[in-house]
Image 1: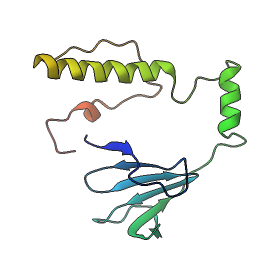
Image 2: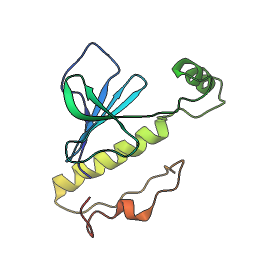
Image 3: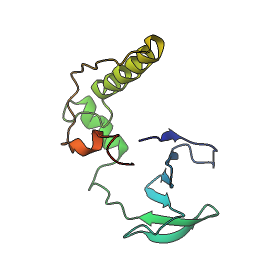
Length: 134
């Protein structure tokens, strides 16, 4: 998978984020989830022109009942919940990045050892990047 989590422009919203893919872009803006998909329609997506861009689809997102950012933050401080993006998860990402840098520096494949356990099962096919085009 090759993508980037970034924003190429600021539209007045400090919390917008874009994830660029080969065949489209996913836009997270407040409570909106919009996908720019010029090649095909997105199932269950509402066709919209998003900030002047055609071929976009708004995806319905179910908001958690009675929970927002502040409520989640307070629950984490009280030890009732793990943060959505915990320090364990960030350490795992850094482990991967550092191994990538080491692989580039040495020209050798690196073995990744981590203590991170995902909170949901991951289909092994997701990790297979060689037997089919992603």
